[in-house]
Length: 264
Image (tube, rainbow, N blue to C red; front, side, top):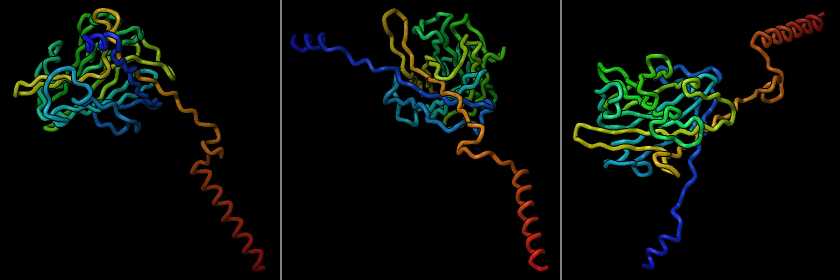
């Protein structure tokens, strides 16, 4: 009875939603699956030790995901690298959730994600493998393939060690006007299934709160656009290669004239 009373008196820990700072990319990112144009930034890691929703895992090699986000005025960019020792990619349409796949839950209004509410989003991506192309699905807007109308872009790569999915989601699809320091409520998740019959899922911050099927998500903060002073970062006036060549020519010409004067 004492233990029960203490349990009733002590509130359960309620950690604050984690924050991820997404850098601004002024030239955008080419969604090609190659990742060479991604800015250096920390990744959000989903692991069985900290983010398991359900399932049994043999360790990080069985399932682990590293996710990064970036933004410009048109798109929210993402890339996920998933360690998975048995990638299953067979299904299409709304059934991709029964394969290995990556998804993003989004709450554009920041009032909590309500399951199946068309104001919120659940967008999933199943990697391509072999002769099967990447597939995507958006569930809460009546069910649609957002790749078909350009609402999202995505490319993928898969091998025996896992898969990579790179993508971009249009801000106007989400009904969001992006800007510096804007807070986007979202959480990524990965689903794992293999031929041995194992089934499991890792999900970022996703807490049921206040109402039935209302979920609080994590935060992505859009990092402000860097401002470079007109005289450069060190205050000096930038010098072009052409200007440098002209200056070198002037110096060399003066040196030649001085030498000729001394000879006379």
